[in-house]
Image (cartoon, rainbow, N blue to C red):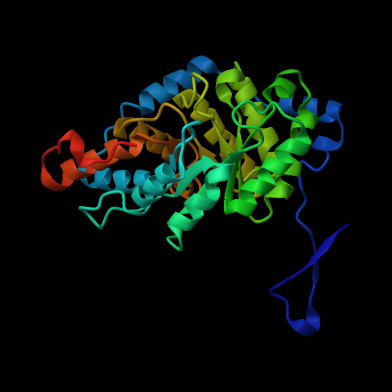
Length: 331
């Protein structure tokens, strides 16, 4: 049995304590064992999930709490541009907005990260400087994930070398849907190693997983493989970040922490455009995973237009009126 040194013991009487037992150490020993585990997870009641998010969606957030919630949501945004037409100039403009979302109100918090393609990560890193805002880069043949593992690993290493400190990878959905769970697991493990010190967000592309049961299985697979975050979508496939999907993923990270002691983040992405959308997600986080996840360290919004609506609502709370459409920049 492996042992660890008791840090609270005196130096002349140190005790060896049993190392924490990993309850899932045997899960990935074979395809059959992994399949049995993933298909042995409790099934998801889709009607029940939809009813719960509908009920939570009726919760109202009062003025003082709303001001906090808007600032919290702003601080959770991964401000994103993932277009083939992206230029260094566009990324620099996005970085400037990330640092100072509302130049007219310096109390507005900065966003969590700027998310770009890996070849533009260096531009984002230089523009963000020592602001503390993260540079997230999509990798592993985003958005399809259709490439050899060697190319995916090279993609990750290139993004990290360019300055990304967060990597958003896509899983091989074809392998997952074909039941080749161990292949998907091994690839995430390899990508995690290639990340070095960069955090890894694992994109499940839930719109292609078909069922909420598959979303739960993919969530557990990604967490067991070492993902720091599980992310709903690339934003390129509909449906993307639905509330029932987010509910299932939040239940997964809650249960994973309860059984392993390890906390994993969640990032819904795609289709979250309004302050109301963001508020519904924050209520869902609080009521499902708990307040420990109400932080950009553990919850993010992958979005481009969401920030503008949050800024308009923030200004409305501060001044009592809405500004015109030219109050915020067009991304």
